[in-house]
Length: 167
Image (cartoon, one colour):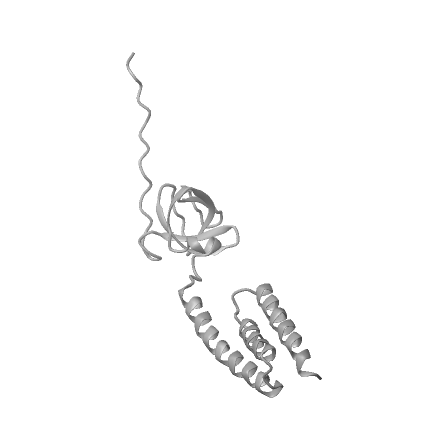
């Protein structure tokens, strides 16, 4: 194959590797090879022998791969894995709106959201009790009294009788 043809081969390879990386963002697997192919394409346009172009492609690709692996691992460490989606509710405090019985689900309010809830140990939890979310199972949360799994549920808040206003 003619050395001039390698210019276009390296450019096409760089473009394909870059497009492949764009289709799988965050992995940083194909991008180093795009850098290697781009470096080889520059050398091909400068008229460097094909063997040198291939060597530069390999060296630049391996060096970039090592660098991007470190970057990828660092980004993975700093990216929160807990607290995404419904798992963000784990550890949150909630208030029981409808009592949670051993057999029936109750309702709790977490921030401004209402969720169906079940007791983590099967014990009843009265309405008004403070609880802590320990697990999310589909569309319901598993809760324990706020003092922990073995703490008794606090008594419900007293309901004040309506007072009549004097005209």
